[in-house]
Image 1 (tube, rainbow, N blue to C red):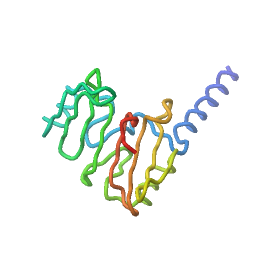
Image 2 (cartoon, rainbow, N blue to C red; image 1 turned 180 degrees about the vertical axis):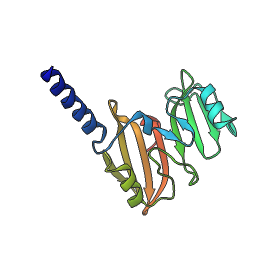
Image 3 (cartoon, helix red, strand yellow; image 1 turned 90 degrees about the vertical axis):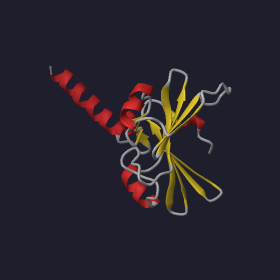
Image 4 (cartoon, one colour; image 1 turned 120 degrees about the vertical axis):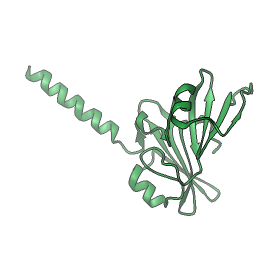
Length: 162
Protein backbone atom coordinates (compact mmCIF):
# COMPACT_ATOMS: atom_id res chain seq x y z
CA UNK A 1 0.00 0.00 0.00
CA UNK A 2 2.72 2.49 1.00
CA UNK A 3 4.86 1.60 -2.02
CA UNK A 4 1.89 2.07 -4.37
CA UNK A 5 1.16 5.47 -2.85
CA UNK A 6 4.80 6.59 -3.20
CA UNK A 7 4.94 5.41 -6.83
CA UNK A 8 1.62 7.12 -7.55
CA UNK A 9 2.75 10.42 -6.02
CA UNK A 10 6.12 10.22 -7.81
CA UNK A 11 4.42 9.57 -11.18
CA UNK A 12 2.01 12.44 -10.58
CA UNK A 13 4.88 14.81 -9.78
CA UNK A 14 6.77 13.70 -12.89
CA UNK A 15 3.73 14.24 -15.10
CA UNK A 16 3.17 17.69 -13.64
CA UNK A 17 6.82 18.57 -14.20
CA UNK A 18 6.70 17.37 -17.82
CA UNK A 19 3.51 19.30 -18.55
CA UNK A 20 5.05 22.50 -17.27
CA UNK A 21 8.49 21.96 -18.82
CA UNK A 22 9.83 24.97 -20.72
CA UNK A 23 8.85 24.98 -24.36
CA UNK A 24 6.29 22.17 -24.04
CA UNK A 25 2.58 22.53 -24.81
CA UNK A 26 -0.32 20.13 -24.33
CA UNK A 27 -2.74 19.09 -27.07
CA UNK A 28 -5.35 21.38 -25.40
CA UNK A 29 -3.09 24.34 -26.27
CA UNK A 30 -3.34 23.61 -30.00
CA UNK A 31 -6.26 25.86 -30.87
CA UNK A 32 -6.94 29.03 -32.82
CA UNK A 33 -10.26 30.78 -32.24
CA UNK A 34 -12.98 28.14 -31.92
CA UNK A 35 -11.04 25.46 -33.83
CA UNK A 36 -8.65 22.86 -32.48
CA UNK A 37 -5.86 20.76 -33.94
CA UNK A 38 -7.28 17.59 -35.55
CA UNK A 39 -10.89 18.85 -35.65
CA UNK A 40 -12.74 17.07 -38.44
CA UNK A 41 -14.70 18.97 -41.08
CA UNK A 42 -18.05 18.45 -39.33
CA UNK A 43 -16.67 19.93 -36.10
CA UNK A 44 -15.09 22.84 -37.99
CA UNK A 45 -18.40 23.67 -39.66
CA UNK A 46 -20.20 23.46 -36.31
CA UNK A 47 -17.77 25.66 -34.34
CA UNK A 48 -16.69 28.13 -37.03
CA UNK A 49 -19.49 28.12 -39.61
CA UNK A 50 -19.02 27.92 -43.35
CA UNK A 51 -15.54 28.84 -44.60
CA UNK A 52 -15.30 32.24 -46.28
CA UNK A 53 -13.08 30.69 -48.94
CA UNK A 54 -12.02 27.17 -49.75
CA UNK A 55 -9.06 26.17 -51.88
CA UNK A 56 -8.61 22.60 -52.97
CA UNK A 57 -8.64 19.80 -52.66
CA UNK A 58 -5.24 19.72 -54.33
CA UNK A 59 -3.09 16.74 -55.18
CA UNK A 60 0.33 18.29 -54.71
CA UNK A 61 2.90 15.88 -53.30
CA UNK A 62 3.92 17.06 -49.85
CA UNK A 63 1.33 19.84 -49.94
CA UNK A 64 -2.04 20.34 -48.38
CA UNK A 65 -5.09 18.66 -49.77
CA UNK A 66 -7.51 21.37 -48.70
CA UNK A 67 -7.30 24.88 -47.24
CA UNK A 68 -10.29 26.48 -45.52
CA UNK A 69 -10.30 30.19 -44.67
CA UNK A 70 -12.53 31.29 -41.81
CA UNK A 71 -13.01 34.70 -40.23
CA UNK A 72 -9.63 35.31 -38.57
CA UNK A 73 -7.87 32.01 -39.23
CA UNK A 74 -6.98 29.38 -41.80
CA UNK A 75 -7.19 25.59 -41.48
CA UNK A 76 -5.01 23.24 -43.48
CA UNK A 77 -6.58 19.79 -43.91
CA UNK A 78 -4.63 16.71 -44.96
CA UNK A 79 -5.67 13.17 -45.77
CA UNK A 80 -8.40 12.09 -43.40
CA UNK A 81 -10.07 15.49 -43.49
CA UNK A 82 -8.77 16.69 -40.17
CA UNK A 83 -7.33 20.10 -39.40
CA UNK A 84 -3.60 19.40 -39.29
CA UNK A 85 -2.60 23.02 -38.88
CA UNK A 86 -4.32 26.25 -37.87
CA UNK A 87 -2.83 29.64 -38.66
CA UNK A 88 -3.80 33.17 -37.74
CA UNK A 89 -2.49 36.62 -38.58
CA UNK A 90 -5.61 38.31 -37.17
CA UNK A 91 -5.29 40.27 -33.93
CA UNK A 92 -8.91 39.57 -32.94
CA UNK A 93 -8.37 35.81 -32.63
CA UNK A 94 -7.02 34.12 -29.49
CA UNK A 95 -4.65 31.22 -30.02
CA UNK A 96 -3.09 28.54 -27.85
CA UNK A 97 -2.95 29.68 -24.20
CA UNK A 98 -4.52 33.07 -24.89
CA UNK A 99 -1.96 34.78 -27.11
CA UNK A 100 -2.81 36.84 -30.15
CA UNK A 101 -1.22 38.54 -33.11
CA UNK A 102 -0.24 42.11 -32.21
CA UNK A 103 0.91 41.23 -28.69
CA UNK A 104 4.36 42.28 -27.66
CA UNK A 105 6.79 39.37 -27.62
CA UNK A 106 7.40 40.03 -23.91
CA UNK A 107 3.67 39.56 -23.16
CA UNK A 108 3.53 36.42 -25.27
CA UNK A 109 6.52 34.96 -23.42
CA UNK A 110 4.94 35.72 -20.05
CA UNK A 111 1.86 33.76 -21.19
CA UNK A 112 3.53 30.87 -23.05
CA UNK A 113 6.81 30.63 -21.14
CA UNK A 114 10.23 30.01 -22.60
CA UNK A 115 10.21 28.41 -26.07
CA UNK A 116 11.77 25.04 -26.85
CA UNK A 117 13.47 26.49 -29.92
CA UNK A 118 14.27 30.01 -31.05
CA UNK A 119 15.91 31.36 -34.17
CA UNK A 120 16.06 34.46 -36.30
CA UNK A 121 15.51 34.65 -40.05
CA UNK A 122 16.33 38.17 -41.22
CA UNK A 123 14.23 40.48 -39.05
CA UNK A 124 11.82 37.69 -38.05
CA UNK A 125 12.06 36.01 -34.65
CA UNK A 126 10.71 32.44 -34.73
CA UNK A 127 9.74 30.78 -31.44
CA UNK A 128 8.47 27.22 -31.24
CA UNK A 129 6.87 25.15 -28.51
CA UNK A 130 6.89 21.36 -28.82
CA UNK A 131 3.78 19.23 -28.34
CA UNK A 132 4.25 16.99 -25.31
CA UNK A 133 5.04 13.47 -26.48
CA UNK A 134 5.55 14.45 -30.14
CA UNK A 135 8.56 16.74 -30.04
CA UNK A 136 9.73 19.06 -32.75
CA UNK A 137 7.46 19.45 -35.77
CA UNK A 138 4.24 19.55 -33.73
CA UNK A 139 3.12 22.28 -31.36
CA UNK A 140 2.96 26.07 -31.54
CA UNK A 141 5.04 28.34 -33.78
CA UNK A 142 5.10 32.09 -33.21
CA UNK A 143 6.66 34.54 -35.67
CA UNK A 144 7.45 38.10 -34.62
CA UNK A 145 9.07 41.13 -36.19
CA UNK A 146 10.45 43.87 -34.03
CA UNK A 147 8.82 43.23 -30.68
CA UNK A 148 5.38 42.27 -32.06
CA UNK A 149 3.81 38.87 -32.76
CA UNK A 150 2.81 38.66 -36.45
CA UNK A 151 1.54 35.08 -36.88
CA UNK A 152 0.70 32.02 -34.80
CA UNK A 153 0.50 28.48 -36.16
CA UNK A 154 -0.54 25.41 -34.18
CA UNK A 155 -0.59 21.70 -34.96
CA UNK A 156 1.71 19.97 -37.41
CA UNK A 157 4.43 22.54 -38.05
CA UNK A 158 6.38 20.71 -40.72
CA UNK A 159 4.29 22.58 -43.30
CA UNK A 160 5.17 26.06 -42.02
CA UNK A 161 7.74 27.76 -44.19
CA UNK A 162 10.31 29.09 -41.78
